[in-house]
Length: 336
Image (cartoon, rainbow, N blue to C red; front, side):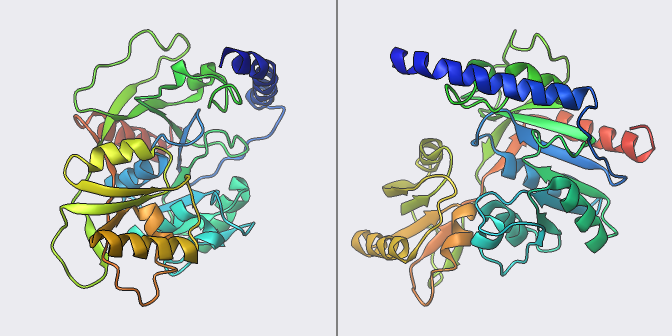
């Protein structure tokens, strides 16, 4: 392991220098950053995947959706299309990405759009939805061509950014000191009342919040109506499957975990295997919203009993809610 780390270190250093040079050009105005009159909140991280960006976007929708006409703009990771696209509830993940489709399926009245060019995407979104009052930018911390009004930087409590290393040695997309660009730092996936980190932020003086995961009652989405099962077949394609398995096993017995890579695009063979597992164990299937939007494309007339388990962030108090509302009020009052 030491030899591997030693071999990767030069590549990690080179990658870090390239990213720092890019950020220097943006910081000095040598590369342009576009801004828009419609307020924007960028939700992102320094690491590759697994910090809970999509659940946080959902949290912001539920927090602010009654006060603002909210829209979501995402890159649409994993899609096979390019350019700007409005996500419809009957879309398929290959056309728009699984997470934007997941958001659209849960919030039908919220415009959700995808575009790898966020500046173009914002322009098109505002044109198509001119009454939009707030845009949530999913995974946009590194997309500096678009200047957001508020940057929320997420980091997993179990794998905090300050204990990580740059790609390819670690999972960091940027140097740790870029945390200074965040308006607020949120450690996610902790425990209620988890101990706060100390001494990790020599270059960051903004507010720090801690969130944990809540698991609402699962919802049945396929098969004949049934009571909530006690034993299930777990099907997932997420960044931290062991974390999901640990949490689900607190209140359900997992007979088998069909574990797939994050953003896995399911095929007919996957669906056949899931059906076979459900038949073999004579039990229901539990999956995530991100996986369900892809599985339902393949379900056909199968009667497999499938339940979906949402995961939502929660905070120990209302300090974060107040912080966001006050920041947006300042922006709305014209003091950006």
